[in-house]
Length: 197
Image (cartoon, rainbow, N blue to C red; front, top):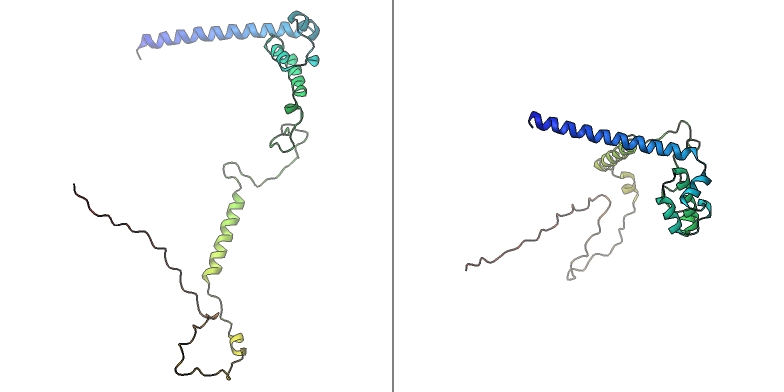
């Protein structure tokens, strides 16, 4: 930008700032004038009923559009909340329905495991340590139960199979044998005929 473009932009910014300052001063003067008057005087000037006697949402809407101080508009909104059954009957299952900004309800010296930027960092470390311990347990071979194998009774009276019979049934796996390693899943293979056209 050239010097004159920058100068023109600065002059326009100054003019906007002056207008905003004048508008803010007018609003502050109007609020001060309204604050000096009582609620009854303000309602009489605006031709509106008492905010606690409003009967419909349309009356509340008209009340909020009027140039009145915030304290009267807040009273009108409180009346609206009592008029509307959806707003009046608060659902107990509403999340964040309570006011947690009240310092009287805050427990002093509240301790938490939550860390800003890290979340529940300690829980994540514990879960990681448990996973490592479990992996270490699974990696270690279990000792073979030698004492149980020696105490197991043997069957010497089992009949011998006849020579012309079918092959013997497959033996069941014992605890000493490791199960076969799972095979990798087969992948689908596609073959396309080459078409020339």
